[in-house]
Length: 262
Length: 267
Image (cartoon, chains in turn cyan, blue):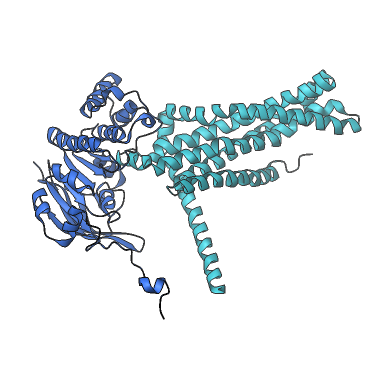
């Protein structure tokens, strides 16, 4: 009994390590075969439509609501200290530093990541990838790499739109609804948000999240057992793993970026 | 003619992990012929096609296509060789995000610099050959199983390959589609000068169209011969297979402990 459970544990560990190794090789192969994704940029643009453009609605609506909530909650707290005019700063910094990249990435993982995994998994299950290989077309170059770069390009754009919508939501609630002074809302925001420290770091975060999410989604799809349970399991794993990866990476990146900022 | 035999398989063994699927197969396919590879489900027929296409490498022995050893080619040469091969997958494996037209045009667009006008003509010609020119603008989801298989056939011959492999082309087809598919394989082989390798377990349909048959069982070739040889064969396995008998050398029961023991009868 004990022996069997130890064996099981060992087996799982070995499989886990083997999968990580396979994922790393997959990632490298994908990068090496990325030529086609840029030479025939149309392929990548097509995928940007599916991963990026079709995610717009959920990103924009969520951004608006998150910003509106920030406006309400921020006002509530700032009012206690009599500094309601700083609402613009609070909304903008929360969004461009954290909420924009992170929440947009979480939404992206569940909206586009799951779709990518399901699509690649089903293409594999129905032998479409095999067929492509037999037609002397490399599926990594033709199918996988364009989706990867489409995701990497879309993610920061979506995060930026999320933040913009959020700031607009904060403005609606703070200025239009509650009546915070419009001039100080914008001018304080303008003077407090630093391009390099805040915006650029936010963009770097979202690029990293884009790489992580699309890699996980593509790998899970490519590695999915060619059955209905296999594809559904892989889709679930994509959402769970990439959400956790986003949150963990966010902590690491934040720790590096905002050291020593007051 | 450079080589009389387009495909030569010598003493090939292959296994997935510990399970040995093929144990020393010898097989040749002459140019211009339709060759059938038959055997019960799961006997390694599809694996044989994957070996010829270079998707897996043999553990032992050599697979030669047009004189080149497939297992030893580097990726670039393998891809060059694959351009001269077509493969029809069991359920067609059409790209579901493209129309019938784009599916057939896929290889022409990927591998040639032909102008779109020429591609259009070529695609319509291939679709006409399989009787589906009128279906060019449909999506794969709108096709019946038999039609999807014919589109896949048109796609497989788009670059005028020298070898076409068919993985279970008759599986799950109604009698009319069955006859249509069989005739198409024969006719395309003759008119385009192809060599066709048909993996199947549909004995009656394939015996009508093939030149030569190999029987695979337990990872080895157990019988071979022309269609007439096979019909007349008195080898127990071939007899069981051709006449579809439930029990014989291939047992009806999956290996199990004694029935009485399993039902806990007696001591």
